[in-house]
Image (cartoon, rainbow, N blue to C red; front, side, top):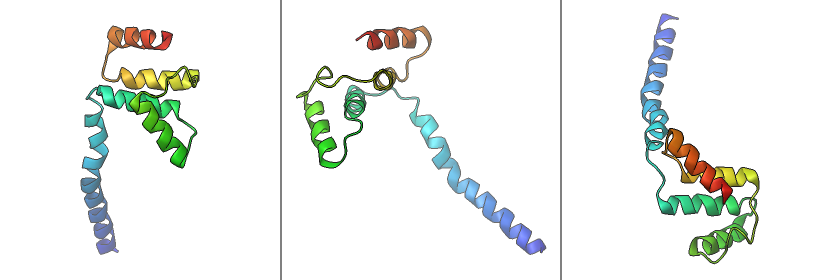
Length: 106
């Protein structure tokens, strides 16, 4: 019984050691602001939400090329908030609030 407990504890510690870099990695990645291409990808993705397969790929490609506009497909308030949040990621405090406000106004 004692050897079973030791083995379980050893496996648990090994699992924590293996999982720690994976769990901590997203926290480090969140510190970087999105580039303009990442922001554009997020905006297009929000605009094409609900589309699937080839339809999504075509709409995404057109959007990234600038062949469609957000006015052609109105965004829901939630989608607009997600898009603005993605664009302003990395900003803090009053700078973030002003950028969010400006983005949400259009």
